[in-house]
Length: 91
Image (cartoon, rainbow, N blue to C red):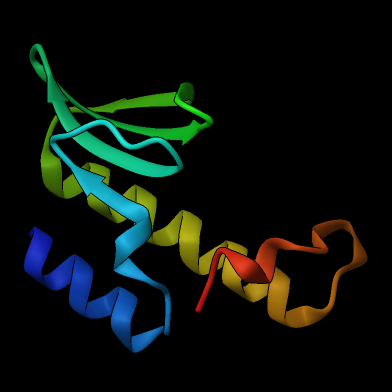
């Protein structure tokens, strides 16, 4: 999966691509960037990085993030009370 395909899939699922930053840090949202030999996916909240996951390729990193966002959307749409507020991330 490349960035163009990733963004296209997000749009199809009505997930805002604006919450994803490529190569740059973001104050709030997800970041996909090259770090040393690895591609890293992380979550940024209030300028602090959380949940760093490393992958051998950008494609693997994008696939991981897409599945994570797709699952979050599914849970939010199911009405699961444990995820109240999550649907603001999507759409």
